[in-house]
Image 1: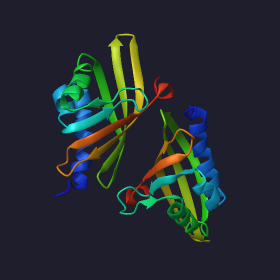
Image 2: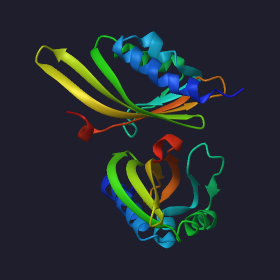
Image 3: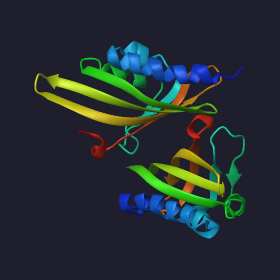
Image 4: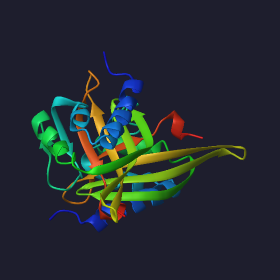
Length: 124
Length: 124
């Protein structure tokens, strides 16, 4: 049975909660076994498989991140969502990135492919 | 030689101009021979090949459309862009759709895959 639109939409909430908690287990937990993650698209690196994906999120864990979900669109098995990610490096240094993520879901509701669309012009 | 970011970004301008002119030749002209168009994603129909794509845009030609480009992101060979499309049916009836289109470009700068993300909640 295919994942429902509500289940697919919930992935965005889980992902944002995972970022806010800097919790790689929650973040990697949304993915299916053979999933791929390209963040950002065109950046030259595609993380393939749960281990590689877990490694990608482990690298984010030490960061002080604050994520805010701005918009979600569920179209069939695909979830396109927009969020703002503020990363604080010290008292005086923070970057804000506006990201559009595209997550394709499998039948079981796990994400099989994630692509993150952002570039230098989306960083402030 | 791969298409430049400027060439890829220009596809969005061409596409918006094609919508504003209700010109199927301009709209279909951005695509490569074996391209696919899914508009909206999850709608159940994928138009495959130039003839099918031309047919899709021919159906739009009689409509009075006004498109405004709101944002573009170029990531590698992919173009994600947001536009608002106002379609006027008569003096008193118009719909406004907010669309995010994702267009993957081939080496020659032609679009090989287009996916349009919008649903009922993006129509007003």
